[in-house]
Length: 303
Image 1 (spheres, rainbow, N blue to C red):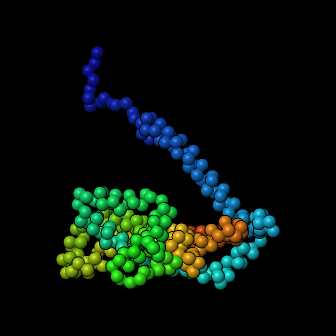
Image 2: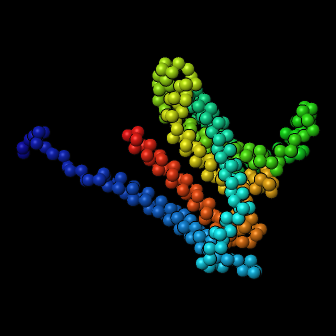
């Protein structure tokens, strides 16, 4: 027998692309994800195709929608009433987004930079209440802000006035939207602050000689991506929301989402409701694509 020379001995060649077991795991996960993903895509695409086709349809005398190739539904979208509702929805969504940003940034800042070991606990305390149904939370606010609700009862008992009408006002609708979506602003801003290098803040204090100038010149630009992400996550759903206006507002505060709901349920005009839905989705898609392109441009410039 000859001795094995360690300088010339070779180990068995490893298969390319990883071990067989890792490849089996990859195929297994792909198979497990294929069915639910295909199921969701199929139902989403099929429902969207039906809505798009119905938007060119018409409503028969008996209220039944039928497919057609007419553009009358899209022409009706330019009605001054519908345009006024759309502009109101945009103004409510913009106000909601701005208020959420003002409220969420300080909360995220304190939790991320001063939360210490309690960061996870504080984030849980912020997020867990929002596990409750959005509809139930709006019902709760409706009860609190009603004429004989808790808020007005406290105002009367403290002799601050004879009661205030909160419901059926734009303030109640915007307040409900803020409460419903503020968490979607807190989380991305918190994530951006958590990733930021805190040494930049210390260097900024030495350079700009003040916390406010440091914030505007260092902290805010460094977390701009998270803030823009929160703006998108709040503005898009707030624009199409109808629950807050339905429960906290009235006819004078209805939004475009309420109008779409009425066309499908009360008005029995599915083609017009479908046209409104398609037009709204196109607008939201344009906003989303614009944000993604701006984000990609900033990433290329940063690299």
